[in-house]
Length: 85
View 1 (cartoon, rainbow, N blue to C red):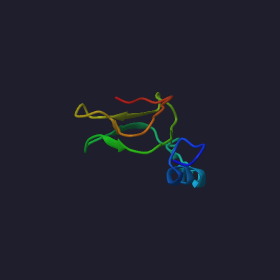
View 2 (view 1 turned 60 degrees about the horizontal axis):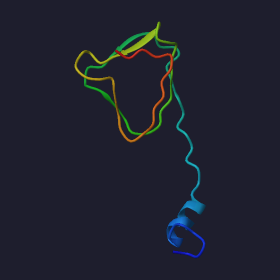
View 3 (view 1 turned 135 degrees about the vertical axis):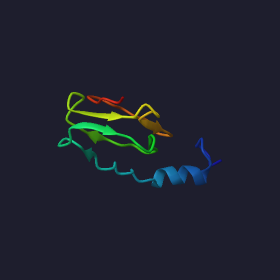
View 4 (view 1 turned 30 degrees about the horizontal axis):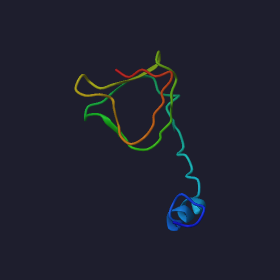
């Protein structure tokens, strides 16, 4: 370890030079209405994603009683004003 640090020098240097990762553009579904019926299984989410929609009264995503709607792996998620069935 380098003197005064808690991480080995090489690892600490990596974090100091790390650049912020830009967030992906949101998926804009504000003009979409009705129900999106999934026919091939759940949607895999492995990175941050933002989906903009008109609200749960106008747009829903339905897993077709065959699976869940999203399979979320390795990322934090938030949802508001959405309907997932």
